[in-house]
Image (cartoon, rainbow, N blue to C red; front, side, top):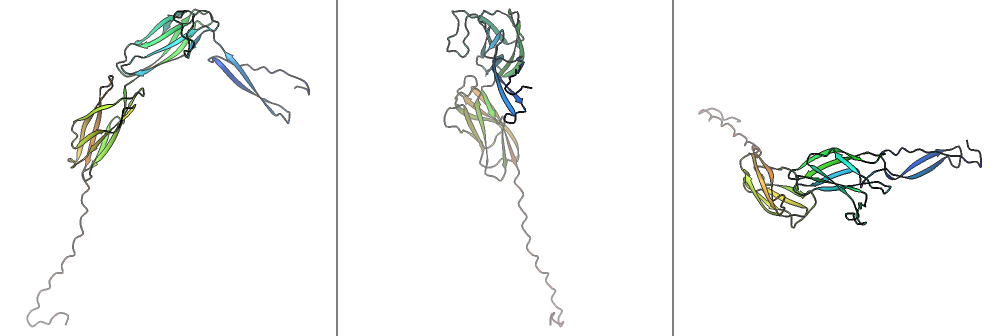
Amino acid sequence: MIPPGGSGKLVAKVHTQGYSGQRSKNVVIETNDPSHAQVNLVFSFNVTTPVQLLPTALVNLYGVQGEPIKQTVVVRRPDGKPVHVKDVTGAPPDVIVTKEVVTEKNADPPTSTVPARPGDVRLVFSVAQTDKPRTATAQLKITTDHPERPLLTASLTLNIQPPLRITPPRLQLRRDAAALGAVARVNLAHSASRPFRIKELSTKGDLPGCVVRIASDSAGPLQSIEIKSEGPAPAPGIYNGTVVATTDLPAAPSVDIPVTLRVVAAPADTPTAQSPASPTPRPAPAPGAPTPGK
C-alpha cells in the first residue's frame, strides 16, 4: 500500500534465455485509484550473449539443383575480444564447413549486411554435391574457447529444389467421343524466379490427335504449355504419353511432362417414340350380311 503522496518500488524480472538483441515487455499494474485503475509500463532492454551467431543461429542452405549453395555465419564476442572456434559438428555428410579467422586483411566492408570484423570467425557452409533435389535438417554444435559460453547450437536446413516446378505434375485430358475436343494447360516455374524460355515442344507415346503449343509470349520465370485433343475422337479408352519441353536452361535442358488422355464413349442416342400402330383391318362382311354400324 502506497500512501497518498508517497512512492514505492516495482521490481520486474525477465527471463532472457533464448533471446538476444533489443526487446520490450509490458507490465500492467492494477490499482485502487478510480482515475488510474490500470497503469501500463513498458520495459525496453538489450539482451547480449557472451558469444553471438550472426545474422542468426539458423543456417538455411536453400538453392537450385546444379548450382552452388553457400551461407556464411559470423561468430563474434560482443566485448570486441577475439573468439576461437574449436570445432563444428552435426552437419550432414555432404555439407562442408570452413572456418576463417577474420583479420584486417579479410574483414568485410562496413556496408555489408553483417560485416565480419577482426577477431570474428567466419563459418562458411557449402554443399559438396547439388546434382539431385533433396532436403535435410541437422542440429549443429559449435564449441568455442569462451568460459561462459563454450557451446553454441544452431539449426541447419538443406533444401535443394529442381530447376523447374511443374504444375500440375501430370496433365489430364478427358474427352467425350462426341465432343469436338479437350484442352489442358501446365505451368513451368523457375525455383529461383529466374527468367527462361521454352524453345521447342514435342510429344511421345500414345496420344492420338493431341497437339501442343507454347502459351507464353516471352521469356519469364513462369512459362505455360497448352495441349489440345482435336479432330475426330479416337476410340474410347485411356491413352498415355509425354510432352517433352526443351528449354534454354543448362540445368534443365529438357523436361518430361506425363499426359493422360481419357476418351469416354458418347452417350447412346435417345430412342425415338414409336409411331402409333395402324388399326387392324376388319374382315369383309359375308355376302348378304348387314353392314356394321347400320
